[in-house]
Image 1 (spheres, rainbow, N blue to C red):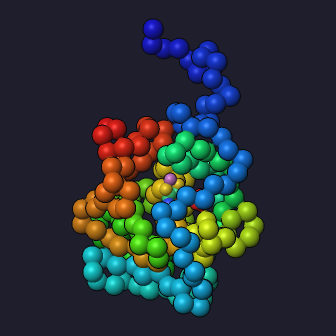
Image 2 (cartoon, helix red, strand yellow):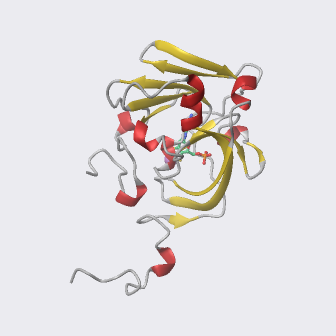
Length: 200
Ligand SMILES: Nc1nc2c(c(=O)[nH]1)N[C@H]1C(S)=C(S)[C@@H](COP(=O)(O)O)O[C@H]1N2
Ligand SMILES: [Mo]
């Protein structure tokens, strides 16, 4: 029978959770390499279109951009979810506005100081859906969680939220990043369970 309502199915208490996720109160650290040592004095963020640099912010310039606070649930593909995580940072809308650009392509490859990368669609980054976070829970973002600055795209699986962010590159096509090259999904929507490449 199709048509059973959410109120009927006995899962009202879990409907905030994407399928097959489990709530954790901890904040696990998930990294493919050791935490890089990054000093804000040396940090910069570069925006490129292909190989062409569009804009670069040093820490002082980045820190002066408009800031937002959000409280969001985050969902790791290894099945833990953490509810009501509190972040502060710069929205991608404000970042691109500061660069004086409208996105020239439909896709971005995010690059990190540990050699990690992940791909994102522009429409997943705009409209207040994503930020470059520099503070977590009222404190500077700890190094193991991506400090000084990480991407936060909470409506996608957390592997899309690149830690130790150093670059955003507009790409003509949707180019696979670190985990996407290793079989993970190109988009990673937890509500659609887009875990692996062959999860339609
Ligand atoms: N640069 C970088 N970003 C990364 C990763 C990584 O290994 N390197 N791991 C990803 C994965 S798989 C997850 S689940 C989250 C984990 O973030 P956390 O360690 O703050 O929980 O970061 C993502 N961003
Ligand atoms: Mo992950």
